[in-house]
Every structure is written in structure tokens, then in C-alpha cells.
Image (cartoon, rainbow, N blue to C red):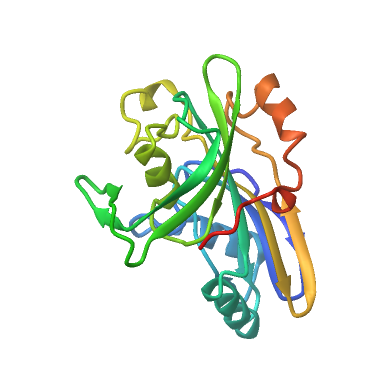
Length: 231
């Protein structure tokens, strides 16, 4: 078990790098989930999970150190005041270089979800995409909701499933050592102070490729991008 990277240690919260291919919660009777690993490594008496990432997803995640901070973050998330940005790689090119993916999500088969046309409580995701070498494409994504598998379903719905995704891209998942989805950046204001974090992926041949690394030099402040207003 590798030591967990604590990206930032604040009096009220910590920002942590979750590795790919580890469950957030424990599996079985063993305390091997990411949350318990963080708690043990930091020897925290109290630690409150604020949000979670899928097993295949790496990147930035927030934990509160006390109940008051946890309640504050809960309100921020409910009010959509925590901006999250993700990176993904697909070997399929979208019809448009940027866009909005919006629709309700319904359970499908084998643990999958699907996007439907209704708009009652829609999952909302914006994206920009950039060409990489070897026929791959890098996506910068900004979700405006927090649905299960939201980004994975969104990209699948436009014909660009995430490379290595064991559920939504089964035709090539066996070729990849990871699913290429990474929680890349956070931007939020906590108790009157603004916090911004960016963390590039540290694992995955496609993420570490020269073409991807060069593109990431242009994506260091995703909150400053000209994201269209979402109605």
C-alpha cells in the first residue's frame, strides 16, 4: 500500500490525491477503502467524507476535519458552489470540440446508467476537447451536478466512452492499465477565502504522454476558461 499524497492540509479540511483503481469505501470486512486509508495514515480522530470518486477515477478529493466544516461543505455542494474539473481520454472524436451534455439519467443493465432525453432532474456536463497523438482525444470537463457515473455516461452518450472504462468501454478496457478519468481541479470559497487546486495525473501512459503533458500546460486554470452559461 503506497503512502497517500496529502495535497493540502488546512485546519478544517484536507485535499488528498486518490489513486486510480481503489474503492472509496471498504470491500468486505477489511479496512482497505480509500477513506479508511486516509484516516489511518493521518491518524485523524475525526474525518468526514464530503464527496467521493469512482474506483477507476483518480485525483483530488476533499475531507473535512470537523463536523462544522463538513456541514459548510455540504451546503457548498448543495448550492453548486464547489467547482470541479475533470480530465478524460477517449479514442473517439466528438462531433463538436466543445459542448453541453444534459439529460436525466436512468439505471440500465449490469450496473450501468444511461442518459435519456427528459429534463426533470438532469445531469449537466460541459466539455472542451483537444487532439492528442495516436488517435486519442483529451477532454476537460465541468460537471454541474453530481450524479453516479455522470461523466462516464455523458461521454458515452456522445459516442466517446472513456478509454479503459471497464463498464462503458468494454471493447478496449482490457488494453489499458487504468480508466482514464481524473479529478483535475477544485475551486471554492470556504469561510470567506478562495481555494484553488490543480493536480495533474500521475499514472497512466496516455495521461503521461508527451502530447497530453504539453496540452496540460494550457489547462492550468480551468475555472478561467470561457465556459458558456448553463440555463
